[in-house]
Structure formats: structure tokens, C-alpha cells
Image 1: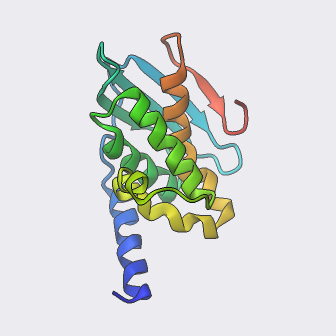
Image 2: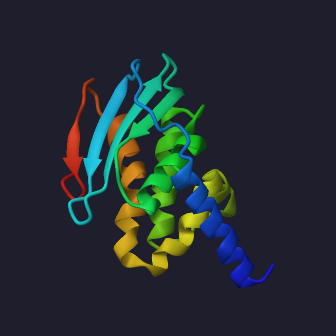
Image 3: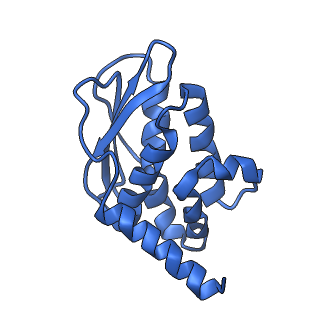
Length: 158
């Protein structure tokens, strides 16, 4: 497949996730929540995660507003981590973050990201890296929170 056809396919997948996001809804039964904001561009992700007693993600949802990249990344992230354990999801978030920063990972790790792996090309657009990582950042913080309840952080305030 030519590079231009591959880029076109990637754009179509990103636009499809942005136009028809998966898991874009709030969860009434969330065990972990997090709201993150990117003050640079105004993107907001409200993430709700439901973990069972074995720390497996049984449901996930997000709401919020933002650019095509942030919304499609949130959709892709929610698909990729559904049914994963907390530890697996945290590993995936680290892999995604490393990937968009240009760090190398085993192909098997990248394959676990499903559609989100196509966002690897975002490394060529440094201004968009925060957009792509916002949902994954919310996931990390939601899963690492000991206390239950809504939390809000802005990108860069860890």
C-alpha cells in the first residue's frame, strides 16, 4: 500500500472515531473518575471507569469536548482497555505515551493499542501530542487514584 493511501486510511479511522466515538457517555456505576483539561487548546476529557473486584475494567465511558485528535484518541483508548486489568491498562497508557513521544516499543506492545497505534504519526506534530495523550493521561490518573470521587487536573499539573 502506498504511503498516501496509508495516510488516507489513518485519517479515515481517526475521523470515524471522532464522528462516531465509542463509549462516549457518563457511567453511573464508575469506581474511578477523572477530569483532565488541556489549557493550551481547551480540550476536556471526563473519564469514568468501572473496575470489578479483580481490578478488571468492566465498563468505561468519557464525555467532554475537544479537537478531532483528543476525541478520537479517547474513543480508541476506551476500545483498547475494555476488559483489561488495571495493570494491563496502565502498561498500555505508558506504551501509548512513549509511542507518541517517538520512543521504541515491541510490536506486540503496540498491537495491544488496537486503532490507537495509528496515532504514532502524531510525533511529527508536537503541538498535537497533548491532544492525543489527554485521554490516556486521564486513564492513568483515574486508575492510580486511591480515593473515589471526581477529580480534576490540568495537563502539566501532576
